[in-house]
Image 1 (cartoon, rainbow over the protein chains, first blue to last red):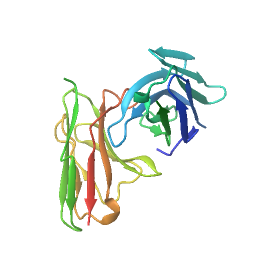
Image 2 (cartoon, rainbow over the protein chains, first blue to last red):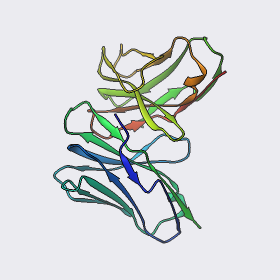
Image 3 (cartoon, rainbow over the protein chains, first blue to last red):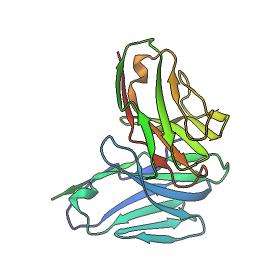
Length: 112
Length: 112
């Protein structure tokens, strides 16, 4: 499961601002998931979006998926210091039902 | 409470001394996997299991063994640990391979 492309690698914003993280890929997918990891801890699932969906919301989180551009974005609105973490996209590859591909992650720092 | 547990959480050992990291889930999940996380390299899959008695290599299986004799347990075995296996290890489980992954809290291993 090779690394995907996430952009930016690091992002620093002020509390209250919005944070946008992007994930690009090269092959077809069945679905795409976003996870959060607080320093040194296990990953926590945020949202799963299927290949036939374009947008999903969960609280302050909004995920979009553009399969024609092979990209996804995670938007966190009105960020809080507690949102400081690494965020990973994880692709369910379409070519093989056994594959999950992890992105390299975006380190988000929300300054109080 | 639905959870994935790992033990031990921290381990310091010496080169060549066999060790086992246990992983257990209480959600009756079919799919389980092991990852290692190293700075700058993201999460890399070591081994995975689609069901009892069904295991397969991930991206970095060298130096590791696994077994899946029961659905709930998926231990990771290092027969002869070496310093390059110093890492943060995560176990994860899911109902199916491309569905929501539930991660354990991690095991931090130091091999001297």
